[in-house]
Image (tube, rainbow, N blue to C red; front, top):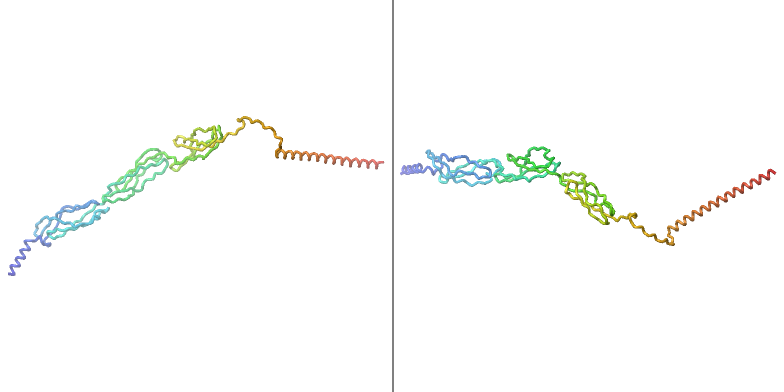
Amino acid sequence: MRKIFIVLLMSLFFISPVYADNHVVNVSYDGKVTTASGEAPSLPLKAKVTFYDGSEKEYNIDWNTFDESLYKTRNASQFTVTGSIADLQVTTSCIVNVEAAKITHINELANKTVTIGEALSLPATASVTWSNGDQSNEIIRWDNYDNNALKYVHTFSLNGHIYDQTITQTIHVKYASVTSVSVPAVVYTTTGVEAQLPQYATVSYSNKTSKKVKIIWNNQIFNEAGKYTVYGKLYQSTRKVSIRVEVKKNEDTTTETPKQEEPVKKTKSKKTKKVQKEEKSSFSYVIALVVFTAILFGFITLISFIKRKIRIKENR
């Protein structure tokens, strides 16, 4: 009885070898599993199982779930996925090679405008989309360009590089625009006289330079007193300029009708009285001087006469 039981056990062992793990010699599948960064790998659905007796058979593989971050790395990487063959209670694994992410899109750069004489400032980075879904700002390596390209009005393109991708910047070179015009706030004149308006204005430009530019003014003569705004424009430009002109009435008496003389009033003004007083004082001074001179002369004459009389007496 014991021998029969042992025979039955051995028969069961040889008849059903696929249900024991140690009877599987090898599990294999065709091809290498490689995927692009950001793309889920296509794992093999079936595996070829080789048994101890040399027989082979295909079985379905049930792969375990894995985190998608494993295949969304930007750099090249590698990870392992495990699975099982349920019918055999056998586990297996697969190595997945992830290729480095590639740039799938570069946001276009807005056209750039620069004025003649102004330094060209190019963007340092551009927004990039990667094959794994990442977005980032990446440094641009710009090609060299001739500075003479910024000395005249035209449009040109300049290439830059982000890794192995090329990006293009369109550049428009134009004349500098006027940012401000400086003239005096107000000038003054009289009716019928041409206003002396400034011939030049100080003009500032968008490239931070400035220079004197001639002004072409409109009418500059006014026949009535008042405040006016005179308009003009810069020479060889459509830029308008304005200035305030204040006109006063012309008081030139040569152009006016002579006024009728008013009758002389008998009343004397304070000024007239003062003049008369000063004249009287001067006359009195002259009279006093004459009198003093006469007295002095008489005194001298008298002294001479007395001396002569004395001299005559002594001689007798």
